[in-house]
Image (tube, rainbow, N blue to C red; front, side):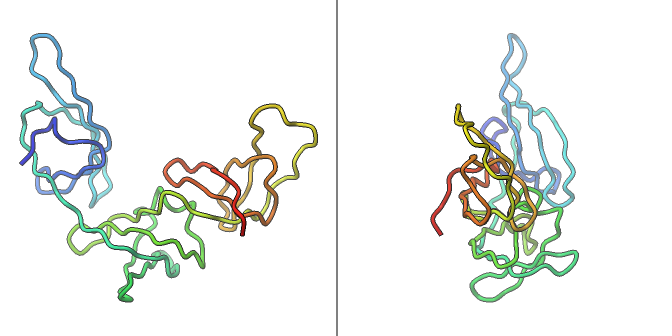
Amino acid sequence: MKTAQEFRAGQVANINGSPWVIQKAEFNKSGRNAAVVKMKLKNLLTGAGTETVYRADDKLEPIILDRKEVTYSYFADPLYVFMDGEFNQYEIEKADLEGVMAFIEDGMTDVCEAVFYGEKVISVELPTTIVRQIAYTEPAVRGDTSGKVMKTARLNNGAELQVSAFCEIGDFIEIDTRTSEYKSRVKA
């Protein structure tokens, strides 16, 4: 058991028999009152979110989640199928892939990490950087070189993001999956 003040964002706790991921934990100690921790939580099984306040010395049970390397295999409406190195298949609903959907495309070879609670996959995490090809972007405007000039580009899977003005159709770009931002152009 750990005290509420020892938990950080991204950790998982067993609260009332359900796994809750801590999205935000804010410690607060005011004058004569007891120290408290304000937490923003998300239930890993239902997806429901809540905010609650715990006394800093309240005990919560930490949960260690299993992780396994997987790669995207195919889309079987409405499920996305991932496969591990032993050819076991894991079906994941679109709702469980909320932060990852913009970067999933057919034929991708990126090694992802599936997060398990018990036998159920609750989320998939991409590597911190991935490489994708630009399917469409407007040509660069000549003479516009003041500062950091960006333009919109569409990837092969339809996702859009801002890229540097010198990027063209067919270029491969490196993307930071934590922020969904363009990092650099990559040689193919």
